[in-house]
Length: 242
Ligand code: PXP
Image 1 (cartoon, rainbow, N blue to C red):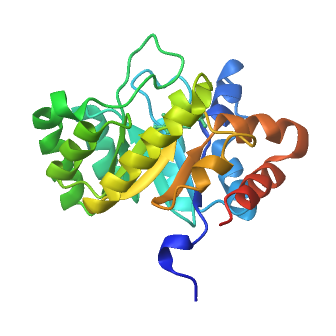
Image 2: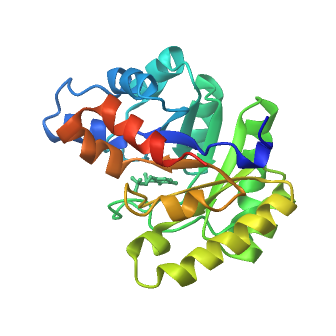
């Protein structure tokens, strides 16, 4: 049997943009619940959705139905507000990923500043953990952020790969991701990563041993327009082999 460390990277498929298309017409279709089924048939190891305060794409209805239909695992990205915590405690996803949120942003712009906001998010983590919801925090790949997450006792960190994906200095950004992934793993955190990953830039991230799971959305939904969601997920899954 292969060492646990060398297992294939798991794929969490982010379906926000299925709902973005639906909301472009304020219609019923396409439905992220149906999309989740196809993503799972394509080999997704988990389904991720971001329930934003402004509900611009994913709605509470989606999260509730996904909770009842997803067979793999449901990860809900949310900000650490009372409103979101109440929803999480009612719906009980397998995992909550805490993310920062600004109304004006097109997508999540950076990691949560855990060094600055640790005390504020601590009670949120306590409540979610008591309800047996695993907590992950989306952070920029900086050692002090990783250490702050470890102190809070969360189960995982999701390293923000946006800077790497922007492609200005990918070699440098890869080294930073590698270093912080090692530190997180040493501190007992599960290491996830995501943001801006696609079919052309993902293999270098897969090569980082400590990373066990990736959350990918835009690239998969975009490719699904041409080849269908099941195939788009299967193609990405094939790239996550080690
Ligand atoms: N991880 C987090 C925390 C995110 O906010 C997003 C975007 O919703 C992703 C991963 C997926 O990013 P992308 O859509 O660029 O693949």
